[in-house]
Length: 211
Ligand SMILES: C[S@@+](CC[C@H](N)C(=O)[O-])C[C@H]1O[C@@H](n2cnc3c(N)ncnc32)[C@H](O)[C@@H]1O
Image (cartoon, rainbow, N blue to C red; front, top):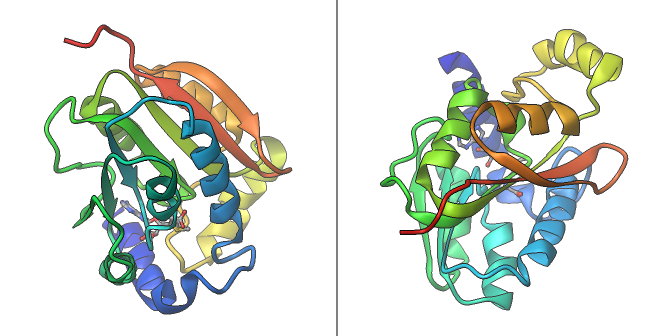
């Protein structure tokens, strides 16, 4: 499974310099749809700290800092995507190299964890969700936005298309599959939304009272 992470890293290290401006389906078009919806959702949610897992070039954090001051963190496995993010000098933002299934943060560090168009690259998706839950504060929320259809279309993609790609795409899930996975990993699902035919967001909450 380390091979998948290496493929993702190589792929995004190559894409980094052109990722933001190459606004096609295979570059940043769908992530931008997801990021804009996430920013819209968070406009009225009170938070002081947010972690974006698989933050890429920091597009979401740029949107968020424009609408709300908070302590922003981004983590990604591609050093080149992070270099582009760092060059943007986004205020109150710290970027860290790492993988989604081993987050280098203390338990209960964040009010919000986001994961935008990155989850389908994860070789250990359940571990990534457990880590998101761990680093969230009680009552914190996890916004996961990704692309996938589920059903027979998803089966074809996962079994016949993705294995032929060299971009570290591991497994796509539909919206309902992600919602079930969140519940299995300890979240309460509080919202789901289809953003386009294929792009969706699922929002989970970590239950419990803040200390
Ligand atoms: C399609 S890009 C999306 C980037 C960004 N979230 C956005 O909305 O523009 C997917 C990102 O996930 C990162 N990624 C892939 N596998 C990862 C993993 N196991 N842990 C952390 N980041 C990962 C890639 O390096 C890449 O930056």
